[in-house]
Image 1: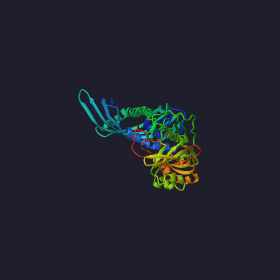
Image 2: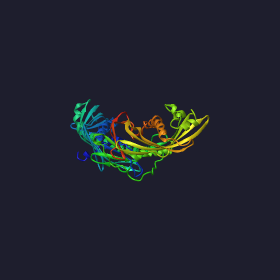
Image 3: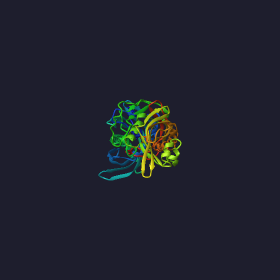
Image 4: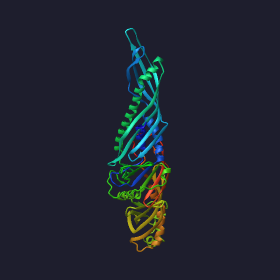
Length: 491
């Protein structure tokens, strides 16, 4: 068993790698998101994937066997074994090993049950005899394994098999019908043939599975659409880092316009290993603050940070009468006139990861318009610098948050109605920010940013922390929620 102790079953490998692909990556040298799978995550994948692997290969039909067997006192008997089928496999012991060369999964001491039809015939000058029946086969001490290498190939994950094999220690055959006197002859004549058939069939499945998986990995999408204009770049960056206790991947992770996978915003690898006691969780996902800034830049450039506010919960805020004490000249010139606010963000909001929050600074301009019949009259323009913080959390497979107003300043840019008492204007703007602007932003923030998780898997008991001044770290277990198939895309 020495040679085979380094191997693992291909189906185990393929399904295991799909759990690893709860992660993305990049065409470029930059990596802004990293994912680390701990020993606990590997154990979870092993238990789940072995079950799925067995279901995927059962039943396994083996080729027909026929040959002549020399039976004492009788002579040569023609024996045919057909419809040989593996219909059950049990794996009592298995484990995963990771190292610099690749990933190995080993299933040891496995047992398998087979069924088959048997038939023999004998003819001589004087008579001809034949018989047939069914037989059951028990395979004992089967060790199956493979070692595969993972590497980045132009943003996709390339999978290549290093070693693979299957070894059967022993089998027992029980004839269920026909002449029992031929039982021992079947065992002596066909035990080695059946062992070889099982070993060859499993080994062939390993090669086929690796080839199919590698082809599928090459066809994985390299972006995850989020909104009509946005997509996350999920191409792999560099070679996966395999150690004895974890497996780590890096991905680009930046957001960009749909179908635009060329990001030249940054030119340095920014993802360093940040740990939040990941050994207690299955996976650890680290997102650099530049991921959030790429979202900010994308939506700013697409014109999504400009809107006209003409309806608010307290509609009196959009009437000059509400402003007569803060801006008396406005009310005096336009008594009881409806208003609207033209709000434009002046530059992409700046996002910083600090302590246990995501902090943002937003620079915007607010134009107060008076509505006079069919005419829109701009009367005042103010610039606002808004400081807010967002406490992130995980909802299903999305990163969401709620923005809270920390502070803001208001500066008059121009006025058609004379000077304003800005400390009075500030109080009205505070009410508008708290009742209109911040709730509006939170509606969109609660839709969340999707994390690159495959269909059928869900983050569970996720914890979010900011371990330093640049990275948001998510530590989570993973649960399997539904039937899934190779080839389904990210969600």
